[in-house]
Length: 110
Image (cartoon, rainbow, N blue to C red; front, top):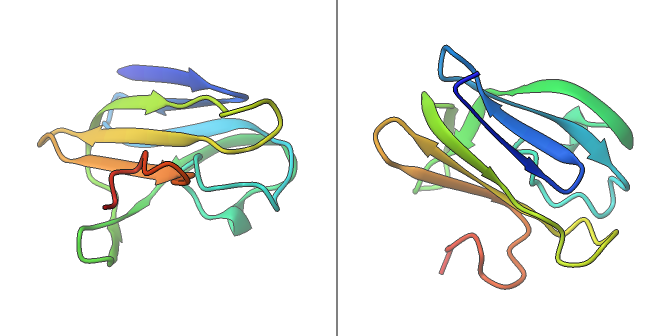
């Protein structure tokens, strides 16, 4: 593992091949906001085993293959049980990818 970050009930890792993966607990799929970096349809309520992060959305809104990553930062809930979290991934070229809840503009989407 090259890098790891733990958030509220989940952990993000950068593996030696620079791919990213996530594992953790989701209280409710209804309140899941995308902080795992994978689509909700690929997850279950409760414990989720390690899931690779294979796609990202680029600046023009197209889904593309995930780049090689160098760092991850997992967020924490705004209040317990809210499911409102976000995560940040930084690739080897310094590009930043943010995913999850954006109710306060924390994803820097404008």
